[in-house]
Length: 303
Image (tube, rainbow, N blue to C red; front, top):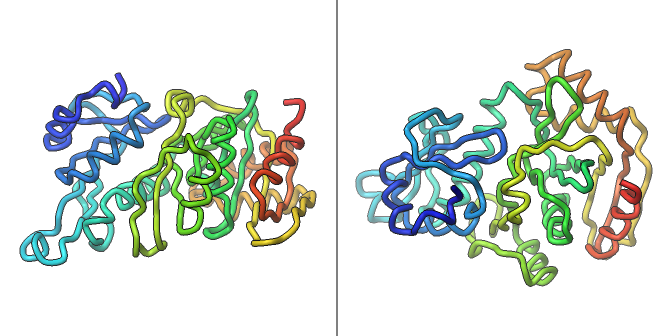
């Protein structure tokens, strides 16, 4: 069963009860919420994902609720709970769905021990992976969304998963987070892109999320072998620049972007070394999506 199979009125009941469990790759998240906008965005973004109605095990037990007392009526706010613990400071109620997405990122990064978690976008084609570690504002999510629109299978735009016993890459394939100018860029880049209505004035500016393809959602968790590691940087008006990255710099870049590298110790060291030895690394500066995608596909030629 997928979320699309649940009628809207039944979905509302299950969200109120807290017995809706959504499967994203290896993760099961139970979600409890009474906020109508969250229900609508969940249906829009997670419609293709497997789910079930069950009080059984879930990796993450999540709830969103309106802040109590006068805050319910005067400048209403939303609170995020993981395992009944309030994790973040309250945000305006209009930011409830972005808060859910940020909260799920927090859960994966802080509560996962059976994978090495990389802060990186990643996609798959012909069984091999493209990993893009980069800081916020680098354009990695925009490039990830554009590649997804061109037929690459989304693994993740934020939390890439590396197996602990082999150099295999996967991801939860959750919605891609787009910020500020990127929202309009992707809307113009692909008429088929499905986005949530933008939410303004967040700590990250204006935010919208893009729905993963049906194949990405239903294949979430299917692993890929290493292929490319690209460190992208958007620079407005700049000509395309592609520079091979030494393996030592690729290794350092992956370690720098690994959430739980220290906790996993030697295992994490060896798995990243395996990825580096099986990948080609590049630094890319870009300003034009069509141009950079053509070059990335040329790098992946022969996969």
